[in-house]
Length: 344
Image (tube, rainbow, N blue to C red; front, side, top):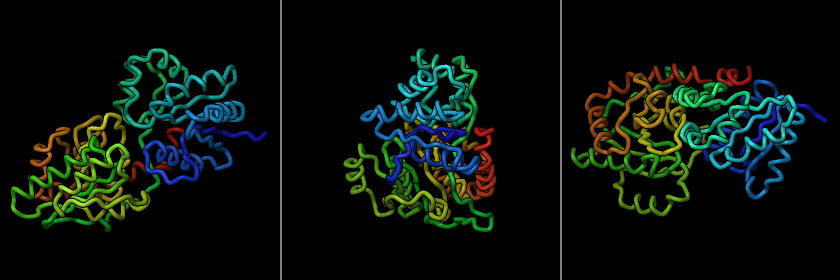
């Protein structure tokens, strides 16, 4: 029977076009792992629909612990209640290493009141979290197997001579994430509207990109009908084209207050396009953006966001001066560099 170095059991949604963060990270991680160690050394076990087909999940886990040196899981918040325990149980006394690559930033809080799950995860050989702040929080809970592995994606990074500088009104803004109220979509639009109405002219425009969350479709449709023409929904786009789209914008807005935010892929998109981010000071955004790659505002606060945008419109060089730092950072986050943190 064929033996593998890694068995990745996760939600690949094979054959489907998916825009969800879990599937995107699973595919990006596994693609780069295959690039690093060879496709022939990686087994893929798809957990899509595992709640309806639990036997397929068990089969993939069992196959991996029998035939792979290391089992890698990437569960979401529902899967983490079941899959790690199954992995420990099925491994038994085998020498298969167990690795957990975390998606998003919710795990530290999730484990605070789940002592049995924490005990299980402490038996894993490695838990790979997206930020240093997450690592610190879990180590305070007694974990000794935490490694920082930032989010990454296979994405085109612009050269410095391709940077686009915006110096005149109207300044173009965009959002590039799942379209959901908690992602700050309405805050972004309302901030732009407030500035333009107060100025009596179009200081900013806003283009909204991304898949509309199913739970938000009706509300978003009503919201769009009440927005002025300088706020537009641009639909879904292929993620591989993100830098080509974002590069022409003055800034990327990310006024999120979504509970599970970790290391958002949209920030990688922006930095790879040499476009600074204007984001909420929420979860781990301050760690990722710092002071050199964008600006932070108070979460869920349209007035604070409006004031920041108004200030930047009066002195766009404050933002334009950060563009090269965005590219420099993006180059340090190349997948072929970061995968070595895991594969070593």
